[in-house]
Amino acid sequence: MPDSTLLDQYQHYRAERFRKHERTYAHSLPTWRTQRRRRMLVRGLAITFAFMFVVSLLCAFGVDWAPLLWLPACLVFFPMWLTLQIVSGRQGDAPDATLDEYELSQRNNARSIGLTITQNLMLIPIFYLIFGSVITGGADTDMAYAGGLMALTVLLIGGCTPAMILGWTRPDPDA
Image (cartoon, rainbow, N blue to C red; front, side, top):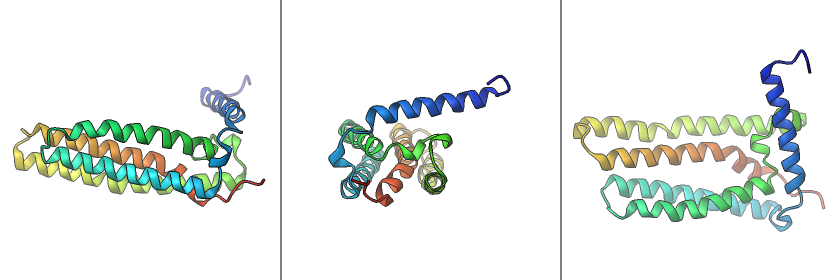
């Protein structure tokens, strides 16, 4: 690849790495690859995100023990997220070179929806922090922590949305 740019070389590297991981995990968790089970994972992630947002609200109201609830939320989130990624073939963040036209179109549509969700939901912590800092004079540390948790939750939602959409909509794999 003498005429390729640094970006082309990186994309080639990403595609090769993706294919390697795809071969490694292609037969992992076979009973979780059904649409029904993937939808269970998507629902579980949605519930976890709602719980994370509630934790951020509890922090906003100054509940001292509320930040401790973030740990169980993460302990639930990470296994479900990794499982969804494995059983959906990581199609939500797959490099272009590894997808056919139909998969590429689905992936791009899911990413577009994820970006829209992120942009709209991000208004919640932004307005909370802007108006809260004006009301409190910027002296409320609970508000800053809660705003950070809200923003983190929104970014997790937006980042997971493409895989959640694809996991929900894709039919069962061929037997």
